[in-house]
Image (cartoon, rainbow, N blue to C red):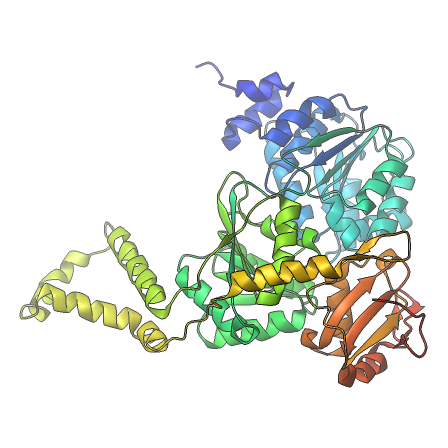
Length: 569
């Protein structure tokens, strides 16, 4: 019987041994990023920038060319893939192994923190062509002289914007500076912030650029929805959304690890299968949580943006933003966890009236209109759960087991009972908890939100004015409360330290043990930042943060009006 190959991949120039692997995996045609990137990358001599959302097939877009370009006879590293997290590192290595199923002479190895460096050194010494690494562990290996990068011909920076957001810029520059004989650099990113452009300009020579969709645009397979409620009802709204989607398998994003832990504990007490993923977990604890989530023994994972870096799990149906991120580009990464590999997904945001204009900003960035939905009523939730249960019952597999043994006994038990009564009793057993909880459930919707959104938009336009410095526009954030009762604090940390707004917010809240509600506007610059905070909490924040160390440097925080550089908001 003649071999059948996917002619579309063959037309891109992929060799026969790799086509066999592609065929075995069931790939039928290349994704847009694969179709445009692979012919360019197969040349092996061209720098490349590819902008595409997560879940669009980027690993195959660079993995297949790497497998075809490296010399299988040379048992030393020739290609280097750098990615932000342990999870993504392992996933890329597994994917490359699958692609090379019929090209067993090519070896790849994953090197990352949180695992034995001795074992990884031994793997490298056995001879590999492709190394997939996180920045920190790779630098450890370089400094130990356990890996030689002189023969690296190809470097892939995967999820480049994520790595730079996490503060890996110096590490990336160090790595690129220690690969003197590279033929080409391939940079893949979901967004193109200024930091990515700067790396591209410094280390790449007239790179070929491919953008799938519009820059920063969202995956077309994702339905973006939002619910408007009051701040005090945010948790109850989350719970109702979960109950209204009984088949949900998703990630809930919070801005701080304190919120992640608090919400997790509340939902666990109410019987939900959920775990938190945040910075306080050890690597062993993190691995255990992720294993349970991948096996779907957990229905939900709740995570901060930092902790969720690099999570690549197939089949996620929903992403829920418990709060909108401070940085609109972070929304792109959150939503990209669903709707992967051609599947559809839903990204839900829970907002207050004052956050409406921030939602409009994200819509503008993604060039996508979000759908406003009413928060389901208690009766809606019960109805949805009931029909989900009925569908499960009708689809139950009864082909196995000796059920017929019990049928005579069941007939005897129910002989005097009508079918309707039996069904009612089954429903009562399954839904008594829901019915009691939602019997007198309140309406959580904010009914005048459209008027509030228009007012908020007008407020935003009025408050966006030209400042003295270069005539740049400075927009007030949703948390810029200002006015009496607030103080402005100066801190000598900024974007140069690897922070962006969401990670900086989490950093200062974790150090100070304060709630985010006490904060107003955060204005970040390259070398320092200004933070608005309720006057009553200012001294506590200064006391907890001033004098602490960050990457060996002493943090300085003080009242901007009395000690730090003065700043106009």
